[in-house]
Amino acid sequence: MIRAILFLATFALVALGSKQQPIVGGSPKRIVAVGDFHGDMPQVKKVLRMAGIVDKDLQWVGGDASFVHTGDVVDRGPDTIQLFQLLQRLYNESQNPTATHSVYPLLGNHEIMNLSGDLRYVTEEDYASFGGRNQRKQAWSESGWIGKLLMNTLSNVTLELDGTVFVHGGITPDWARLGVDGMNKQVRDAMQRKSWRDPIFGGDGPFWYRGYALDREAVVCKELKKALKYLGAKRMVIGHTPQYENGQILSRCNGSVFVIDVGISSAYGANCAALEIVGDTVTALYCINGKPDQARRVDLTPKRSNVQGRLRLVRIIVLLQIS
Ligand SMILES: *[C@@H]1O[C@H](CO)[C@@H](O)[C@H](O)[C@H]1NC(C)=O
Ligand SMILES: *[C@@H]1O[C@H](CO)[C@@H](O)[C@H](O)[C@H]1NC(C)=O
Ligand SMILES: *[C@@H]1O[C@H](CO)[C@@H](O)[C@H](O)[C@H]1NC(C)=O
Ligand SMILES: CC(=O)N[C@H]1CO[C@H](CO)[C@@H](O)[C@@H]1O
Image 1: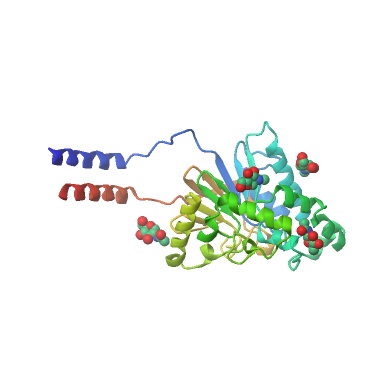
Image 2: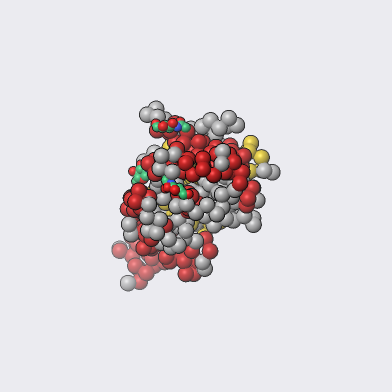
């Protein structure tokens, strides 16, 4: 009798296994994430238009989407002012009570470098765009508009949305233990105290860590899994380590991490890509022939093959029947 029931269950599960699961609890919002800007307004404009976030006049056309930037607005290119103005305006508009969309600009290591006075990658044109070195320094000071913007408003290093964690460099298990709010709080506190030597700004901290992009998967995917477990998330989306040789978004550890810094800036080859996440569907969006009008879509959703899934179920049931 029990055997008969188990056999029936086997077939029922095999049949069910081939069906798509419906989405429960309403359809998830579209999330669009873009990596390092590095001072190149024309390129950023192109990417945001291609991804359906703004139009040619830089007005929001993304509907109720969430737009995430994973940090590094500045350095290597001259358009610091325009880019921060754009982010500030898009963020302001999203704060309007009638707005249905969200804008999340995160900090990158290059924002922290500028705040901490490390100006090695500032270009001469960038200084000139402020009217000179002193004027630039003033804008980045606590009383300047960029200083205030970064210290008071856009001062987060990480964000969790629908099971995806966004961060500039990467979150190791040690930092993941603090949780998203804990990391953001530590960054804000350290910025206020001007403690640029705080470990959260260090090499293994969320601004600088490159392991998930560069280290061997055999080593690093286990770490990532731990970190995601602490964060209660399914995947991590990171910038910081440019994929400029091929300009492609890199998916590693079976779609548990996506490296979205493709080198958008002309300083890195003027590539054009954004990542779209809707529920569990992850899609890379690319410009076609470097143009912003249309996106080439590449599905990066990790494939759990139906055959494998069903075989696993059959194996479990058979084990139950044997025992
Ligand atoms: C954004 O809002 C802040 C505070 O409401 C305001 O000071 C700032 O001028 C606004 N910036 C833009 C670009 O709209
Ligand atoms: C920064 O993150 C905290 C949670 O960690 C959140 O409450 C806050 O709204 C975020 N700020 C912005 C500007 O997104
Ligand atoms: C990815 O998934 C496959 C099949 O489930 C598994 O064999 C492989 O070990 C996984 N790779 C990593 C890096 O986790
Ligand atoms: C807000 C902030 O910390 N601004 C700093 C930017 O960098 C200069 C040095 O270049 C400092 O003097 C400012 O305090």
